Structure formats: C-alpha cells, structure tokens
Image (cartoon, rainbow, N blue to C red; front, side, top):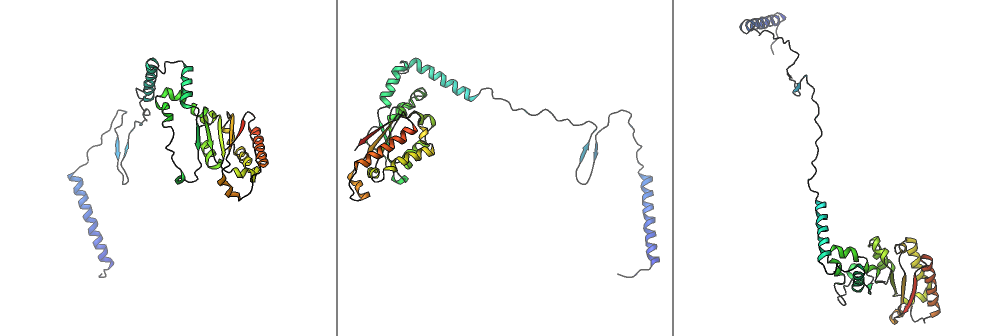
Length: 280
C-alpha cells in the first residue's frame, strides 16, 4: 500500500465530508417530511416496534386469559349402558328360564349334585415339561358355570366348598395352588387330602412330615384356609418306595408317632379340623 502524507489524507476527508453535505441538502429540498399528526382522543392505536430479535406487538388494552377449556361429558355412559343390558337380560332369564325360576333351595341342590362330590388331584410337576394332561374321566365338569352370569355368581364357590383337593407335595403343589387362588376361593375350601408319596419318610424321619405343617404356619399359608374342616392323610405303602431307604423294615410305631405329631400341629393351627388317616 503506497504511503500518503497527512495533507493528502485531510484533503480526501474534506472532499468526502462536502459530498455528504451536498447529498443531505438535496434530500431536504426534494422530499420534505410530512407534518406531525397529533391525536386528541384517549384511544391509542397499536404500535409495531421492530427489533432484530423478534417483532413485539404493544397495545394499551391488556390481554386477559379466557376461561379454561372444559371437556364435554359423554351424553351416555357406556358402563351404565352395559349394566342396563345385563339387568334386562337377568330379568328376562328370571322370567323365562325354567331353571332360574326354581326356588333357591332347589337350585342349590342341583349345584351340589352337579359340582360336588369329587376329589381333584394335583400331581406335583417341578418343571412344566413334566406336566401331563389326564384325558380320562369326566369332561366339562365346570361347564355349568359358563351358562350365564347369574349362574356363575350363584355357584362359583361350590366347586371349592363341596370337593376335596388332593396334593402330593407342599412346596410344588399345595402352596402354589393356594397362592394362585383368590381369597374367596381359598376361604371356601373345606377339605384337603395329603398323599404321602414318601410313606417311608414318615417312619424314617417322623418329624419331617409335621415340619412341613410348621413351615405352612410360618409362611401363613395355612391361615388362608379358615373354613377347613377335614384333612385326609393317605399313607402310601408302595413297595417301590422301599428303594429310597434300602431294605429297612417298617416300624408302625414310628408311623403312629408321626401321625400323633401331625395331629398336634394341625390342632394347634385350627382345633376344628378333623384329621383322618388312610392306608394305601
């Protein structure tokens, strides 16, 4: 860049200043500014103020929030509609169904005959692959409960109160059964059967079988059967079970002592329960 003296710099600055003055004077003579308008009324028009960041609208009237939005309630409640339909169907069944027109005492006798008097046996399966479906025997025993809602509400507890539930093992049969039932179902159970598939266990270790009931007492599983009135203990004397303990001979006095211990444990838990022993 060539070097310039201070005189040349001042000269160029002076020319630039004079040029700006001439341009400004020309604009003042050619485009005069309009006269200012004054308003006498109290109303003020909105003024738009521009800025580099955003456009802000200013007004003299404050903006008030409107009322909160309200959700419209449905004209017809769907649950009320369903309940009304069920009530109409129930009333129609009571008028037209020959079975539901019977007195309650007669219906209860039919329920007892159709749903009671059986023993449901639960075989212990540690793994799901060990479970086997028994295709023999009766089928669709509980089909009566699926006829209508009224029959289900009347007879849903009869299968629990009129039948005996048989178990072969506490941890894998009885306790899971009680844990997966509703409180109303377990309260309706009146009779259970315990099959000692370890009959030799009762004479080899007489305190083990009673200890299982103590375990139920500690876990409060036994208290889920407040209406229990009978406990059947089936002592299985299968010869194949001798293999567990070799060729040791049976000592029936030890088995009898195990029965006494079991009766004492159950009497402590519920004095109203009748304990019965069977030999198989």
